Length: 186
Image (cartoon, rainbow, N blue to C red):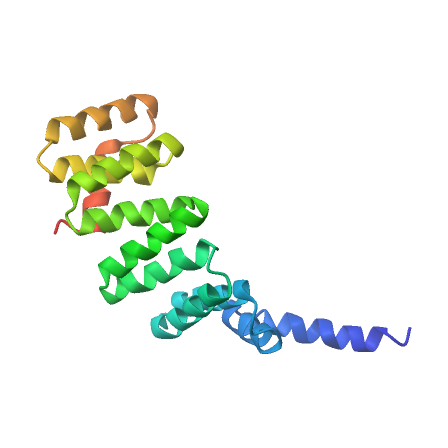
């Protein structure tokens, strides 16, 4: 019975820290600054709050602590991409893929290649990646856009029609339109 009040206090304090991921992870990092996952998670929270430079520092710290983890490399790539460092983002996404075959890193890498108008490289990467991730609609979308933007319109249409037949509720034409808007027509 004597332990209940202190435990109640600790529970209340912890619940209060849960008001946001940023507050929770910042509190936990004070206790364990060498936790790579906490560094990464605080970076994600800061990124979501628009604090990109601070997020970048935490992703870099996470990489120092766990260089073989894939998520921190992918997240650093996101910050570098926002900063306009497309080559740095490309390298970070590749490191994420090499370390863990993280599906989001595949998507991000394909999109960054497309943004840089590296259409043939995008096509080759997406085709190889779809052997591993055949149900990844984002990769299919980027592949179709790469064919389309490189002037191979018939190939883009052919893939879109095949996917449309395999997924009747999914409109590949809408995906193509959405992809052009979200990735920019550059």
